[in-house]
Length: 293
Image (cartoon, rainbow, N blue to C red; front, top):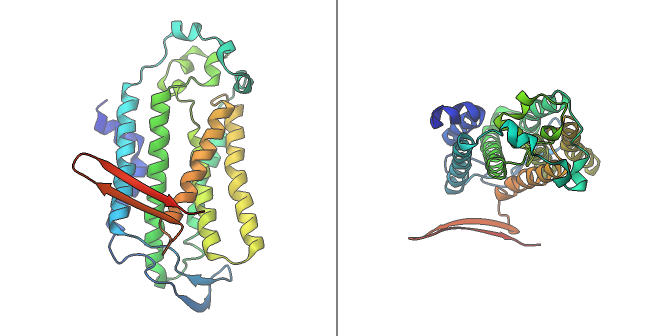
């Protein structure tokens, strides 16, 4: 299959979000000034502008995310499935004791997939509540760009790691599982869990946005409890299917939470704690991140 066609099929939703985001990025879009209004939002909080877009930064992040996904598609195109002989030589004893217990797990994918699909709707709770109203069109634009960057960066990074590490899924060690399921490329994409990483990135991203606007501590606490629990449940369900080892799920949770938390901080207005600056030279390209504790 041609690389370009493979890329479009594999990441069609992400590429679509990229095109939408690029069309929205303009120098004056976003939350240019801190201000509030007297009317209340549906969550009984005063609306305020917290985040902003910067054209150079957004073009860099969107391009980086798209580039990661294209490179991932290239790597996946090079992956060769395991042969029956290679599968027969696999030794469960070589799996570390912490992960080995998931080898005997196997069932058809189900609940974990549903949680993954539903998680793509979670970020929409922010613009549909906090940003409700025609006067907040710029808020929607900032949200759309940040969400696109999140999906592209998190998905692209995860895909590259999967296609580079090529860790065999737990069920491949299970003699009761059909050989047909073991001799496909996806059987080598165990590390790390995309389901867990994606749900964690979206829930932490959403919770981070709500926390930036809401002042009620109790409400924010419940939002964060949901944000932390949702991807954890997704990871547990993935363990039960035999698609991932425990370390796959833990690593996926960490990276997803990282991307979900850091993207909003990169766009915060006058953020003195976190700074992000790309630097281009004749022979090198560098990115500087500074975070003050």
